[in-house]
Structures are given as structure tokens and as C-alpha cells.
Image 1 (tube, helix red, strand yellow):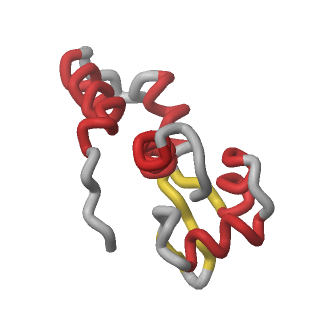
Image 2 (cartoon, rainbow, N blue to C red; image 1 turned 180 degrees about the vertical axis):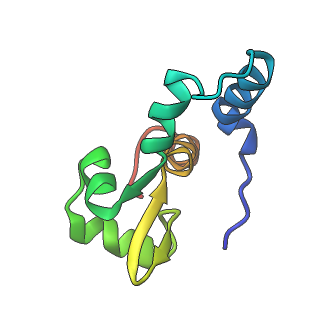
Length: 100
């Protein structure tokens, strides 16, 4: 797995963790936390739609290790946070232009 050089770009998750540790405990959890949990893991189809790519292209990028994901029972899965961080990295690497 490639080393992440721009962890500072992924501060959204750290902010969420800090905020959730400050807020009072609720046995049901916050609404935003419950919504976030249902959207944390994406399928290949969902990632392709999110990135506006053909599924075949998303699969190829994942298989080549260019798109951060993992397999569960032979099917690709992706953490939304990883995809958002990957997008931020691509912006820096490509300086807003060029191919992935």
C-alpha cells in the first residue's frame, strides 16, 4: 500500500472525532453520526457514480492500487473518507489538471 503523504488533508475525520468526544453521550447517537455510519462504506458502483466514472474504470483504478479500496468476499468496497482524501491528494498531485 502506498504511503499517504498528505494526511493533513484528511482533517475532516479528526474534526468529527473531536466534536463527537465533546458532545454529550446519547444512547442512540447523534443523527449525523447515524447517517455517517450508513454512508461510510461504498460499493464500486457508488464510487463510480460519485466520481462520475464508468464502473469498469473505477474497477481498473482500484485493481491497480490507484484508488484506495479493499475487497470483501471478492467485491470492492471503499471508505468514503479515503475517497475524499484521495480526491484532495489528486488535486495537489495533478495541480488541478492532468490524468489520474
